[in-house]
Image 1 (cartoon, rainbow, N blue to C red):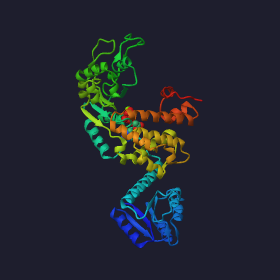
Image 2: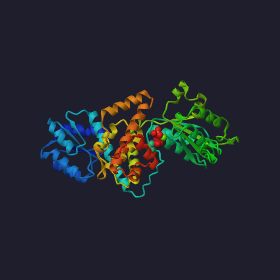
Image 3: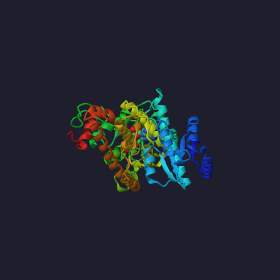
Image 4: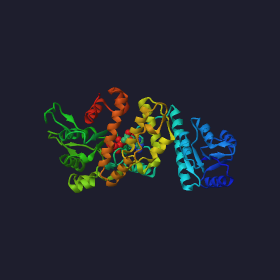
Length: 454
Ligand SMILES: Nc1ncnc2c1ncn2[C@@H]1O[C@H](COP(=O)(O)OP(=O)(O)OP(=O)(O)O)[C@@H](O)[C@H]1O
Ligand SMILES: [Mg+2]
């Protein structure tokens, strides 16, 4: 329920509007001219203002400018029968949230009003929380209160303590690693959480990474080394990008799952492990099974519990909470003070399909925070508005192959890193701080995208 100030001189229209607002659960307050509106503005601080242009003692535009002079001003929606198109432009320039023409469509007004209220609440809340010195960002926190996230939290709660293998699926950037860490955290296992990215290393090194090796078992193996299965004995082994695991290693993994035993590379002693196995992939393992590139028996062993993470576009109600959480994280990392999102930027974020999910949201907010001159993120800083990208995302979601998403995320990464490098004038240390990645990892990407310092 919100307080809405309705500034409208037409008695009948004013009554219709206030009745409608009451019907949808708000508390309206009517003003019939500018002076009455100014009085109300002083006494109550409305959450939104619906404002007519032609009023007995002046123009709505003048009041709009007065209201918008205040930094924490409520959103103002112009509702007017004036058919002057230049006025639409003027009003938007002066900071109106939106412009609705009379005769108005109630549904259109409801949607606009709801969006306006939501973005106003968000910017107020971000502001209030970032002022609180004791706000702690837990970077492992799973943020969201949509039904999908609530369901996910319940499943995590019920499987965490068991030994059951968990397969986490979902598009890139949906939070698969965050969920894997949460499972480990709530399992109360005393050991470590050890992630292994199956796509990051070549096959024979991956084998040694997982199972360890004996001295002299291959060139460069100067000392014996335990593998992640040994090190994670009382903990959790997180096999990320599982779809990239070569067939040969799939067979060895299956044996560990069936018997709990394995040998180091070049070793003869049979070792035991009781590590909890959590896996993740953005590939479609079922179709890989059909094509023969992923073992069916292993798939069933690993997929005892499947957590399928929803894409961000299917849980947009979580956007405000995520933005708030990520801004705290970013402010802390960049030592920045970005606390506000301009209403227009907020609307743009609500309309964007987020093909790269939460990771893309984090990247875009980070870039905006870097480029931001004061404490407010404006729409131009987001770099997300093309209908073309919208179309791409929809197509890629339809195909379900995930390939287009990977491409667009790569392209996004390339663009973002390039901007950060330009911003820091190629100061690699500063760029690493901003991007939150290590020096070798930055160097690898500079090479990968063939960036040129000149
Ligand atoms: N529900 C969430 N709450 C808070 N932060 C999240 C959430 N989901 C994702 N994130 C953040 O988004 C970023 C990407 O998440 P994560 O690395 O877990 O995604 P992923 O699914 O493993 O992506 P990829 O497939 O690209 O490896 C991280 O910085 C993470 O902290
Ligand atoms: Mg991941």
